[in-house]
Length: 598
Image (cartoon, rainbow, N blue to C red; front, side, top):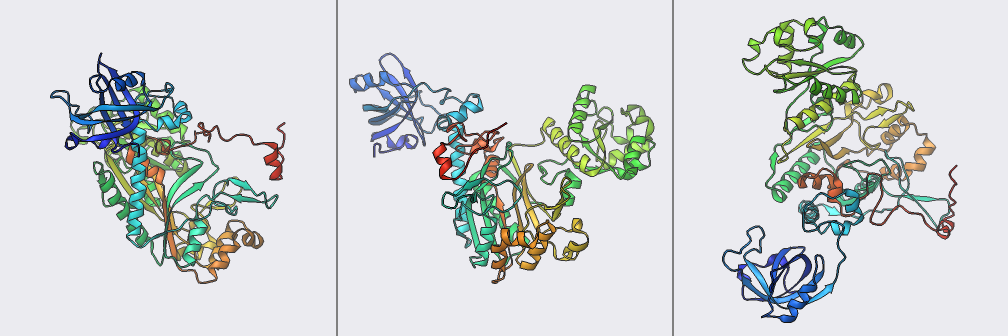
């Protein structure tokens, strides 16, 4: 080894020890006769001192050193002179008096500062990702990711799970997103697909009798990217035999509770995890992945609105719509421009518009509210009693602002979700030091594609319907709910899973509902259906996202900050400049000819 210790491990007790260190020059300071080099490696930073009285040749070498040079030093650990200690770093009580040194490699001037946390254009960071990863914040994110995955492995190993690697080159089967295809050279005209998830493989492992499986799995989906999505992502893939939904949810609550309390004890974890049905989540929060760190619950005002003289609300109700509202506490004196900003948000979400009702200035309570204090375009169509009834339903008080949206449910819930998140942001209700998990269960099994008219799986085609809903598959598929469940956290979907179908005939029935004929079913899924005929146990699983989990624990805004070499939002790898063209020879080997663009 070129070193005896890491830079970050040296302490007072090492004083007097002879050490060899190696790392990068984090900062160089020339004090006219003495040169101080802050040496950095993965474990931390230590101050080294080059003194001409100790090593004239070492001082001369230090004069050549610049930031990010790779160097090795040998010297003696000494206590810093009184008054010069640095309490900001763990090694701040000591320094290394250098006796010998060498430059292992030089460095060009980096395109951005590495030893300072400054704002840098993201594309520049991604182009020079290997430099970006040297920066303290990124290094800590990668170390956090390592600790998270190690904790998960140890947790599951202690509970009898075994880790099984599954193939990356698979058959292309429909699972909800576009596949990444890999052409076969050996079988011209045929293709492998990169797995969107190990879904079918882990179910086959249950048929194989492994009972408790997990894998830190790589998954690939050719779909549009966003802040919390990448073309490739990593998930903790779990499958279990002979279990109920409660068994899986209890395991996940134990895993995430112990993970947060062990890895990030400074976070305030809300527990126990609340359980909501899909319908409850939509009705109360406007979203199936609600942020549970704050209230701002949605109130149903339809019955009250129907008794008013306000034509806009009554027309929405007559057309089969609903009237819903939330309270923005303390915002009763919002300006016209602030109210218009909120209206534009609602319009952008597809709703018809926003009705605002200001309950005047703070103080005195609702009992003292007068109709003259109520500011709204609807005020002249409402009685004071109706205003107070609406306010009571929304749990509002004097000085608050009521935000009301009317229309078709599929239009107003997204608008209310956006309003709820925006008001939480403005009022600083989403405490970054709080982490609030929750379970959402009982999702609809199927959803109608409006363009094609075909049924599509709301989760995946392998989810088992609730037992009591199976008879509805023939008469009313839209009323069938599945044995599926999500983990949500701070407004994100963190995991999705379900109890799986293990009966071949029921699985065929679902595939037929999705529009496949028997020939297509056998071609795409025959391997699974045949396996089910050899004694498939009841089983279920879940797949928490590793990237999103680490993003939440690190307090980052996008998963790109917790992935070593991520793609851009346009799915480009700027470090390798991929995707990129390949040679005609490579295409010829694969029997592929590119079509000329018109």
